[in-house]
Structures are given as structure tokens and as C-alpha cells.
Image 1 (cartoon, rainbow, N blue to C red):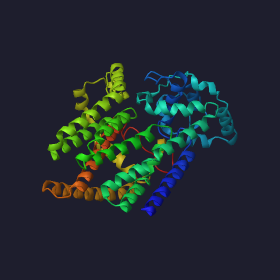
Image 2: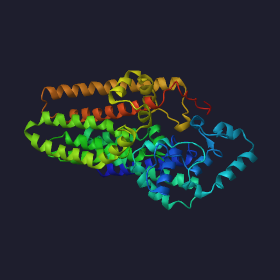
Image 3: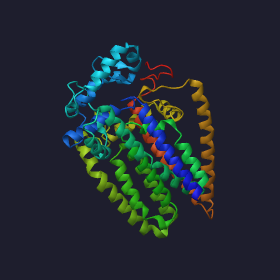
Image 4: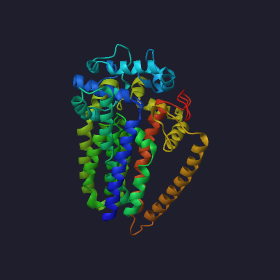
Length: 431
């Protein structure tokens, strides 16, 4: 036990070191959507309220676009020239680069409170407010520091917050696997994925979403262990509500939570009254925590999610559902699965195709093994195995992961497709 705890602390420490490295090595604004997340924080610091979809980015962020080397995708955001991609920037003379760096450091800090003179709207205003309200506190304390220092410190804080996924993930994996060594290996493997650090080593709300969703799955796993754990449904509702105030894709977790409750109702009918009581508490918690925000969003946009694409489309729920057949699901699934092999931030640098093919084949065999294991677990449940908890736990972990993945795939496919933005290979930053 002491050895496992020591190893877990080492893994946690390595997680922090790796995250700090990614945070320091990624250029300013290289983390995807980072300038827009940062501008949202600036707006709250300056005005005390979250931005709207009609809010422009700050003048400070806008000015930095014209003097920094930028990811090539920012050229698609309607920013007026001059714009220097990373390729363009390093083709300049040393004197020209030095002049741009000097201009960057001379951007007045008061511009952090002013809207941009350019008509560049902040599309990250669609996000729920929890992350921005909380992270506006350290940003308010950092107003006297340079822009790059503020960005780096916020990145480092994000890493510290996200690092709690190590102990929470270990507890979750141990409940599923039943062995500490296997749980440690699972968490170690998960924290090796490059996409994870690309995602959290930037200014953005994924750091909160990561630990909240992991905690949500852990609570669901505990609930299906038996009636003695039904009281955790109330906490599950609280975490779901907090998650809904962090990212709209937590809406995809609600059907999975409902299935958890329905399964417990079928498995333990004698404890139905207790189950209904704690389920009602959990449901009330969700509405009490997240309900006011989503009602406000619906009143303003006509959309429950508040996502810009859904808001602009202004479709009815049935109309939105009818678009499912028109989504490029294959492209979305392929992009998300293979991104776990390598994902290069906003420049979307990628490896040659054969490397992805090798990883994809390995992933496919692993998925088949997982499905076979889940099938055997369901068979054991069907025949009333005396100890069905492990297969059940595995099944509900898969269920939550499936709903989570479904939400991410949907959002990814609605936002973009591989054909719209061709991804450059390693060795080039051009589109």
C-alpha cells in the first residue's frame, strides 16, 4: 500500500512537471481557442459579468494578433492584416522580428479593459461561466504583469487544477479493476496521452471539466455497487450541475446518469423508495445549480446549450435531430480517436498517415477486447452471478465514456470537418 501511494505521488509530480513543460513550450495563443478564452476572462475582470456572443475580444488581444507569430488557423477568423503565421514570422529578418517583439511588449495594459476596434467577436462567450468567474480572480491579481506572464501563470494554474485527475482517476480505476497495480497502470497510460496535455496546457475551461467528469464517473461507479451507496446519487447530481456550469457537453452525461438510476431500480426493487429519494435530491441539485444559467441562455438564444452553431441555426429540437444524418460522423470519430496518438495544438501538426494506421489498428484490437470483456460481464449479470459488481462497474464506465464521446464527436463534427481544414504534417505549419 505504501509503495502504491509513493508511486502515485511520483506520477502526480511527473504529471505536474510534464504539464509545466507543455505550458512553457507552447507559444502564446498556440493552444486552440486560447486567445478567446483569455479575452473572456479579461471581460469579466473589466465588467464583472460574462461576455455575450456580440462581445468583441479585447483590444490587447487584438493588438497581439498583429505582432506575434500565430497559428495558421487564426487567418480564418476575419482578422485584418498584417498577420504573421509561424512560417511567415521566421522568414522575417532578425531586425523585423525584434521590432515586432518590441511592439508586443509595448502594448498598453489598459487595453485589456477595452474592446477591440476590429469586429472580431468572442465566440467563446458561448461557454458556461464557472471557469471564467473563478479564473478571473487570479487574472485580476496579475493585471500589472506582462501579457505573456499572465498567460503562462494561468496555464500553470490550469495544470495544477487538472492534476487532481491523477488521484481521482486512480480511485476510479481501482474500483473498476479491483487491484491497485492495474489501477496505477491505467492512470499512468491515460496521463501519457499527448492530447491531454495539449488540451489543458492553455488558458481554457477543460482543466475543470476534466476533474469534474472524472469525479462524476467515479460517483456513478460507486452508486451501482449497491443500495448502501445510493446516497451518492445526491453528490452525483451536484457534480453534474457544477459540470453543466463548466461545459455544455455535460448535457451528454445526463442520459447516462438516468440509465444508472434505472438500472439500480431494476436491480434492487426493494430499495426503490430510498433510490427515488436520493434521485430526487440529485435532480433538484442539478436544477438548482445549473438551471438558472441554462434558462437564462434559452431566454437569450432560444437554445438550451447556448452553442453558437445551434444558436445561429435556430432550429427546433426535431430540426436539430434531423441533422444527425448529415453530420460527417466518420471524420469526427477518426479525428478524435487518432488525436490520442498525436494532436498538435492549434497548428494541428500531424504525423504521416502510416503512423496513424498502426495506432488505429492497435486501438481497434483493444476496443474489440474491451467489448468482448463487457459482453462476458453482461452474460454474468444475466445469469445472476454471485459477484456481478466488477462487470457492472465496467459496463457503466463504458456507458459514461460512450455518452461523453458522443457529445464530443457531435460538437467536433458540427464545428468543423477534416475537409474544411486540411491538417498540415509535421515539418510544416502551412495550411
